[in-house]
Image 1: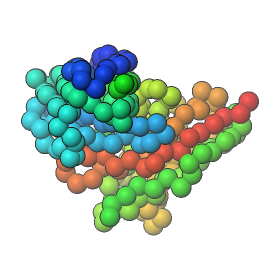
Image 2 (image 1 turned 60 degrees about the vertical axis):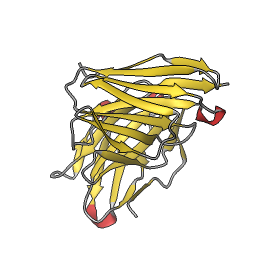
Image 3 (image 1 turned 90 degrees about the vertical axis):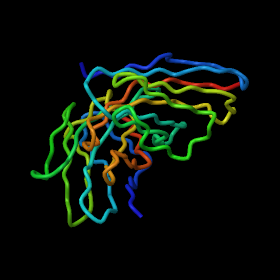
Length: 112
Length: 113
């Protein structure tokens, strides 16, 4: 199984809502990532988890809160987002140190 | 500063023609290098990777890339493009020890029939 799954595929939320994005992989990878991608731009790294511990936070606003409940799951909790947070949110996983990241299909988030 | 550069924002080729997408990197040492492809609204798919050894690497979907240390380049090639290859292509490099990928700005490939 070389698949990373993400739910939901699409999400529309208001600025006062709380929602969560979910990501799952069963490849035994011990590194998991959240990226944000705006249209016609490359992915921007948000967070990295290594062995279920947060190892990189790229100065992401606190309205984004990641969580790694176990080695297969990665969540991104969203609260009080702004319209400029509308983007494609990608999850990825890899073996540590290889850089060979496997990406999920993404969640298209629209903040109204 | 460490960086990955893709000089071509947009390339158009005819179906059946050959393709070369350019990628240059700027690092103190040779990084791990990757090419990813992204269809509209989708995630990224790894086409191929270079870690060390043979400088010509083969990937999926008939793609190959050649690492040239003297030119700090890792260009992607395909001998005959298919209409389904139309997509965004990203070159990326692995930096440091933190499994952090640095992406180029991407090249959008359009294929004309």
